[in-house]
Length: 237
Image 1 (tube, rainbow, N blue to C red):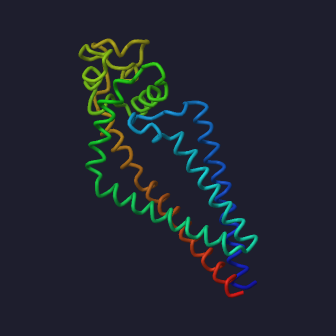
Image 2 (image 1 turned 90 degrees about the vertical axis):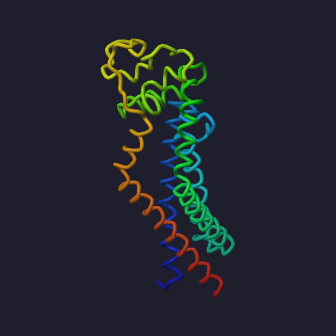
């Protein structure tokens, strides 16, 4: 088996596995959509930035690109392989640029997120048509044992229906003893803000996140190299 056949075989298997992964990601997104709805987000200014939508979009992109790679490898189509190569390079470049910009402007991004969550997100909690946002806040506060953006006082500051000091959603209660416990100021509430709790949680898992990102990057580079080798082999005949 020559270099051309090896590249063809590896590229096909590589993209077949990626296609299966894309189907799995899309299935997870569809399940979350059916369960949480389309707008399970904490950022009202960007309703599409939620796990449900992003998961489905990523799944579709993975399936489309890997399908193109599989077809290009099987048919030994120089056009398909060139398109696959360009798309993969474009995706990798966009990821690197987005990551670099996000890191360089992390303070501004953090300030914007805090502003959007406080002034636009908290007031919509519990409102009609905001099931996804309400559910997202409840899950966040329950899982991270936190309350509000910076602290529990954010709810009485920004939510129009929680004007009394100490009023919060029930998900802020340390011991959820009864429905409506959040309205009682004497009930013990989580005092830590969810912004700091979320940052701490992300930092505690940064090793896993970095490993996944490096793994994805390696696979993308591998796909780019294999498609380039196969495309050159086809061109040389």
